Length: 277
Length: 282
Ligand SMILES: Nc1ncnc2c1ncn2[C@@H]1O[C@H](COP(=O)(O)OP(=O)(O)OP(=O)(O)O)[C@@H](O)[C@H]1O
Ligand SMILES: [Mg+2]
Image (cartoon, rainbow over all chains, first blue to last red; front, side, top):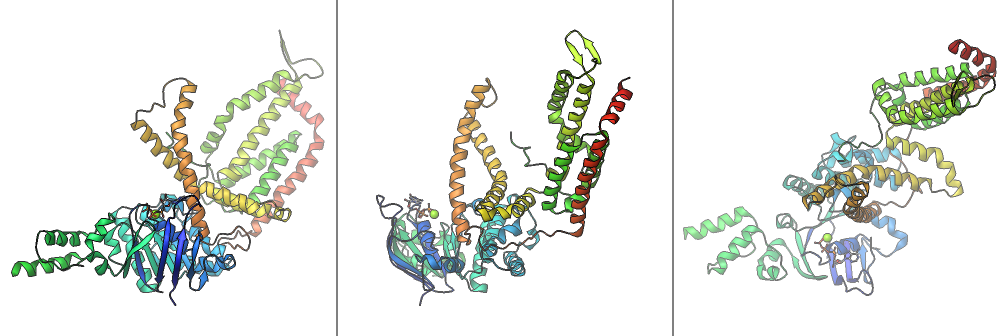
């Protein structure tokens, strides 16, 4: 069984308003690395909130590791399995001191002190912030704050972390830090990572991309598959990675170009081949 | 504009008072206030002053900083002293009798007593709490001290949580306010001229965006907290538990003994203070 499974999910913030999520069926396997793309307001954040049970679907159901997100009794179990990192690092840090913030989740779980200490230390080590344990949170850089937020979720030892535009407010350095952290969580700790992003550079790192438009999933596949459909993406006003765009433009000018090239080096390879001919 | 707002006046340090358990400091502050209010005779007041001096030394806070904390209160201090001096009507002949001004012995006594009391209160609170206890420690201490009230359904944990989140967001909101001020200035808002009403009116375009963003932040924070399994204080454990050491108990006991001392010394009141005033004035 898939780790997360959504069946016919619909959702509206209020009965009068139009559906924000309009019939979504999706399965996310354990240990996978999924990116969700879509233009502003297409319902990505809402989907993320549905997946970790902050809001309940108006229609259909979502199972996370077999737990229905509407099941109030197992709310706690669900939260432990699926954590979420939000866009604005300032609005998700609870405590003024780094280590107390990271301890927030295990404290809520009622763990014994030694266990909390262990989890805090190892979570901080995972995001490479151990030496900041006693620092004040508000004096850290954006990327560091976001890493603390990730550590705060890690301390819960979830099986899945959803990143809702976790890199959107960061500078390029911060963005790289977080992207690297996400990859490490997925590859080394085997945590299922779902990342919502507007940066194609981050999306191509994923194993799978889901494209949303107006509350529906309109494409689902590997990065190479998704970015082959340049026209379809342009239709829903999404960008493609720069090199894909370049090859696409050359194709439009009448050259024969392969689709689904994502990395600069691959593109360079293709182009030199063509030029040699 | 808000650059130099620091919350509280906490100075990190390593003094005896810094290291003392915050819960005990709160209790000792209460005892200290009792001492200051009870002390009536010169001996008792002297004992109180001695305690204040000890606390100041133990806090390791520089005298200059302490005087700074008193500075804004000078007007209040002088004013209450003068009121006491001029308005107290005593028995016996006035010491000074010049047209409508009459100063009696009791007036002098009240003025001095009032001055000492107010000064002690300010200094004591500063060294015991504001200068040597971080706001977070204080919140934790209050939560722990008030926890018996949970039995009668007082939401102690919730209040403490609110306090600590407020403390956490003060720097964030100050930063945001500065940004909004700059943004409004860039739109030619004028905050510095005009009378007080004009200035207050000029604050509106700062406060509204600040308020809106604070509400948005609160919503997001609530989601984030829920995601991290927050469900109120029930069944919650803590990473940092406060540890009372032997010296905290000794400290508390010593101050309690001083209360007793003050009560005893208060008996030696009347004759002694009269003599003191006589010596001082004549
Ligand atoms: N709390 C809310 N109450 C009512 N409507 C909301 C709420 N949050 C979002 N919406 C609406 O739901 C729709 C989808 O919003 P959502 O935040 O899921 O989009 P998104 O894909 O995350 O966009 P973005 O890329 O800008 O983050 C939008 O039209 C938005 O106006
Ligand atoms: Mg969003």
